[in-house]
Image 1 (tube, rainbow, N blue to C red):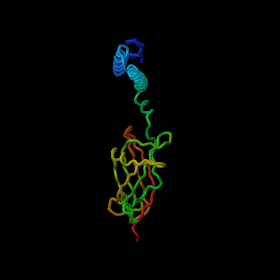
Image 2 (tube, rainbow, N blue to C red):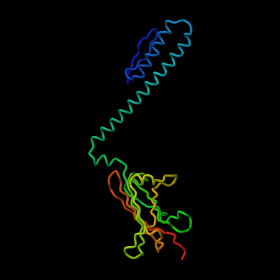
Image 3 (spheres, helix red, strand yellow):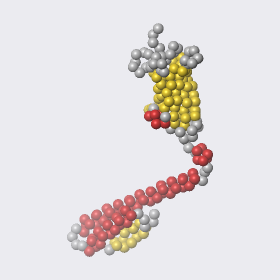
Image 4 (cartoon, rainbow, N blue to C red):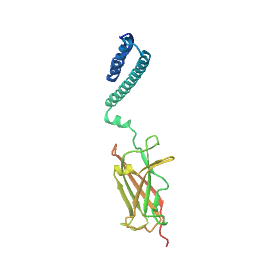
Length: 223
């Protein structure tokens, strides 16, 4: 943004070439200048007010210049992205590269009675650099008792859409993950303590599905 020095009344003032608010402010204190040059008493007070208005106009001018610079930078970024095809644009975005389950994934005891009411998976997503990220997507959690007879091995299952998955996010100091719980399908724990958890995460951005497994332990009722 550029401006110039113009004479108003008996003083020289700075007038920016763009910005409606800046121009309005210039007009305002220009009138005050005219009154100060032609008035009598209270001149010192009016001069002080004029200086304050000048400072405000200069600050507004600087703010508009910063806004113009930000808009220009954003326009350059948009132009750069538009020059790339879909695959190249996608490659520059932060995406899920792999998923994993924390080692504490296993059974959960909701009522603290020593018997687990289902399974919980602590799901973490990592990008291509190995950093933990929070990405949008859906989750399916299944728990299997592989020692059970065929047809009875699936003991817990839950499916979360993208909104429910987002609500399951837990981010704190030293830990960040999605907490996904699934109660027992039969309403009671399976017969064996060792449970295999299978988690599938479908990334909303790319539509790609990731899968991971984990063997956890559960607490059963006393024999």
